Image 1 (cartoon, one colour):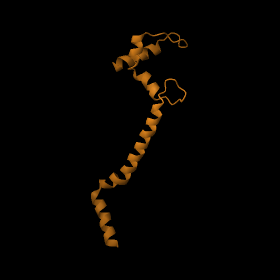
Image 2 (cartoon, helix red, strand yellow):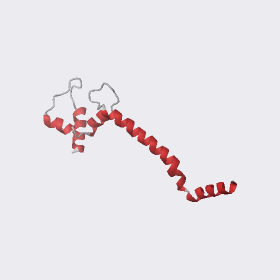
Image 3 (tube, helix red, strand yellow):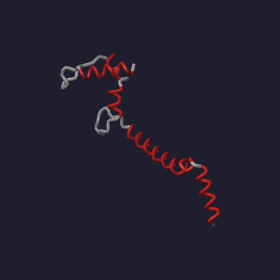
Image 4 (tube, helix red, strand yellow):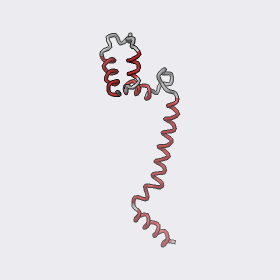
Length: 100
């Protein structure tokens, strides 16, 4: 269904005779476009704040997603990454105990 909707959307936008005057489409075509990757991708990835098709709630989701990514990478570098070489970690801990 997704592939069919996307192909129809590409065909419709490519073969539209008058680009400045969009053709009126019926309800079945509008329903099919709900599944188009092209149409939905344009709406989801739009960064224009005044866009009619822009979903405003996605801006908050983008901020939360970016925050989670930064927190994960911080945690990964601080906690998980040193554990890849447990023998090296034990050697460092052993040298600290013998140095003092």
